[in-house]
Length: 299
Image 1 (tube, one colour):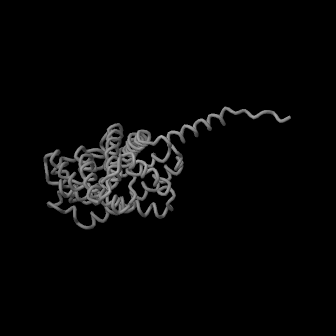
Image 2: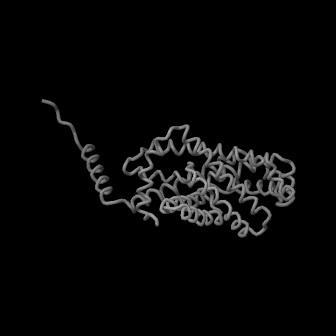
Image 3: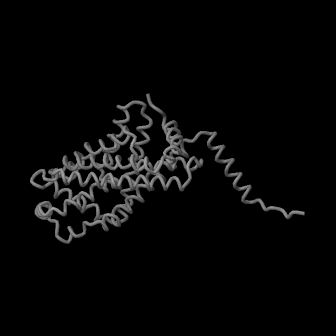
């Protein structure tokens, strides 16, 4: 048994107000754990792929592990920035205001970032990056360097494509009424996004911060230079400024555009009921009437 996409959109729409009216503390707490969960999926995918030289095969292997992060987010009720871009569904009928939309996304983004940052520190301290004589640490540096080196347009476009798939996975999970169905649709759609190599801002919060921390270890840096031909100049470019400017900003904008403008709003307009169309039309006519009304002079 499953919901139609029309029912799924309506279900999400009905929950937009409650999601935006959560307290700041609750939103930050739920988003912190989502950041850690996505980071765990990213960390596990790096372990699986770090010693595979074929890029396509490495991405395919990584894509089998990474989706576990989103599975945890969906089933544990955590708040993920990319999925919450679907809150745009609540804007046309004013279930939520633009201020609530951006406030919620801002809080979730902040919580996701701290979750990814804490997870990065824990992974580095755990010694996990020592795998394969430090090659995992070197691979972590390489992945992070690749993300801060892409052009703004590449980052923006890749971010759009990524969140079209992530939000599609969220909507498909809502369509499913059982846990097995939710996990299966999450797995295959996210597998596609990871194999394709698209950019996910929350995953990058882990990948890049872990790379910056790994770079600080001379052993990992040395292996990265020997194994991947990374230069000192390239290592120097792996820093917080380039993480934010070169990657997080354009990728985040792309994720918002992909999730809100290419999935959320179109799916609302394509699946709204006749009664919803009537309400929006009447509201529009009322607004036009008020905007065209000129008060008369009192006599």
